[in-house]
Image 1: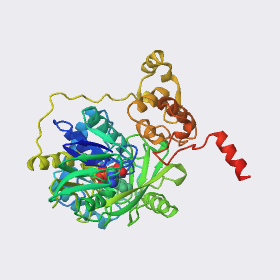
Image 2: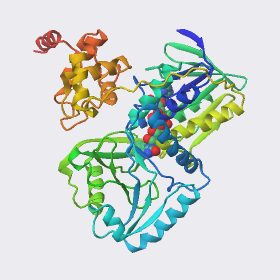
Image 3: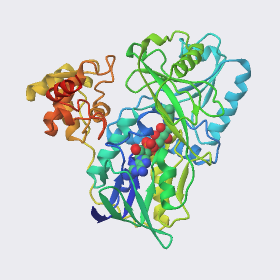
Image 4: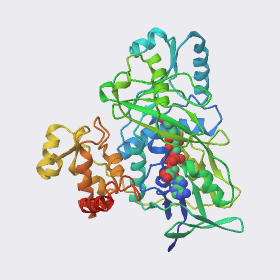
Length: 484
Ligand SMILES: Cc1cc2nc3c(=O)[nH]c(=O)nc-3n(C[C@H](O)[C@H](O)[C@H](O)COP(=O)(O)OP(=O)(O)OC[C@H]3O[C@@H](n4cnc5c(N)ncnc54)[C@H](O)[C@@H]3O)c2cc1C
């Protein structure tokens, strides 16, 4: 067991934990992040719609409304600082009958009260001019220009890399096991391998936030709500140019058409109350396509190349839970249902302000290392590509054909911290294209083994227990002989 001291400990390296780590990295503090998975962003933050929402859904005066608006603005600034591409689509909330037109006006009023700029009601003709693929039966829309899309895992990784580069320490596969409490104040935290003394502990554990709070002695319950999403081939990436929303339901923003920042079209999510498992179902697929085809009749299920489900951590209060608790030094960044991805940078600033008011000394760092943005070979001109290949032939070896990812990018991703197949996938998009890893899978295993200096049998999909080829062919043969 290794022991050390840290000014602040954050539990959870999702978008919220990483945004907070990034914010705190600007100050002279020792900050430690504990994550139970083998990499950042593998909780709710990798499996969502990737929308930087306009603040038109949450009721005014809630934290969700305020931090969604502020987070949306911060994304534009962070995107260019960290080299993350946003697709500035804007959103259209579409009425499907005359009765829904009054609801659009209500959403406009709500958005205005939340500080959204540029909101505009569109007539049916104006709407169809913007989005000709919509069903002829639509009756009007609310246009919100500030909405955009982002690859959520790219943003999480960028915040992580920048925080780590500026001194934050991350420990992976280290689930929190114990919290020490001395006279009503946090004194230490323990994982399998570490005991860390600290006075400031932040619960940013997503779906696990309730369990972490129980360990600290102030419990609450996070309820899961699963949502299934379906990604269509890039051919459909420009079917619509705006995010298409229906009117919201009681439990969700409804089933959407999402032009992603990587130029796919994604449709979903569903909202299954109480389900905490991230699998997709024939029922979910039928629900998504049954609904979306009424809005966009041209879409067919045959063009789905991938599907996934994410689980929303639903707050018991109906709003984000951010700030101090009854246990001294124990703070929440919990109940991060949607728009938690959008709000994350604003949540980090808001919580940092609370910590400062409560006495955390914030002395700005004199030096700040800007993030070195990794090169995406597919985005370069042929002349730029040629130049790279001349310098290093690994730039010319395409490992993933669908997404045009080169061997040099895979090696670079490993140097930046990827230790697993999924780590490479989320850093480079390798395996995310039409063939879903059929071609590149075996090749990338070899590169991981070579660069990490490990036998192939030790290479995992997503950390301990997910070895891809746990037995060598000799061992497989012996096992077979034993069975026979
Ligand atoms: C289907 C779906 C669609 C969504 N769409 C959007 C959208 O378009 N826009 C938007 O703004 N929001 C959206 N959201 C919400 C958004 O994804 C979440 O608000 C956000 O990702 C929450 O981030 P987080 O960091 O709080 O949680 P997480 O990403 O889950 O991070 C928490 C981390 O804590 C770790 N952890 C848990 N317990 C422990 C422990 N005991 N010890 C150590 N580590 C631990 C987990 O492994 C995890 O990595 C959507 C959510 C879903 C499910």
